[in-house]
Image: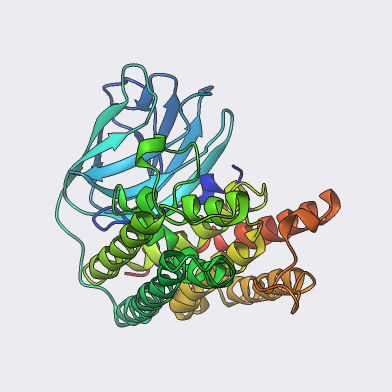
Length: 379
């Protein structure tokens, strides 16, 4: 995925991050002063390189390079079982940057599939950072309000969807399925931070063992492929339980402006990774609903930190505003009031149209990827 290498979020609070490399015992290359530094890391076939990484606390930009690995493309930072940050699908030869605020402590680096350094250690030394600035505090409060509203909406809409499933009402369940999907797709990076919760809610067929496949997508398959809801009531009940648990967890999630800004880029990465390809909603083909929701979530994140960006680079903020508007215009041409989802089925788009959609995503992701470095330095 092209966009995943752009993603960055803050260590010390659950949300997506990035990096990786081999079995090196040395520290990552560090440049710059103590105020804002750069750290070079690699993804290799062995896993995370360096396997043992020591970095001073504070604002940091990680420069990530995939050094020829084909089976290792993901890097996670773990605090126990909790994912503090991750980045996925950094293909061989690609590189990217992410900015974050490192907090003192010992974390686990995890590069799934590495032969000898699948797990490593990140030691963050020094003292914790200063309190958030008033602008940063406002950004966090704004975004927290957004994600809490979305999870509350997710619970309500999922209960309605589950009730239709348990009643065996295929037509009503099909109508409610995209309605329930939207709030989840708007906050997906937050859900992904809670370990196995995202797979429980949103795993696609083949992502997990068939015996462990739960969430929206087995119900999607039942509705659009088999046309029968027989024996799906337990799945519906489990889905409700899982989104309720997510609602509870979101109220306790720690947030920083860099997380919020770069979570917006991760949402665009979700579009590039599984929506543009048509993989996400492979039975219902409501992928454009998910695209719209991902873009909505990305915009909410950017809007929260926009005042910080304007103070540093007003032109960048205006460029991002224009790219969001262009993205909305691109999606608008596929709206269909006669379709229950509000969009034409994704399978109706031509190859040329999906390329144009992908270009619009890339055009938005590029300037948006620069926001993390700005807000991480703002305090």
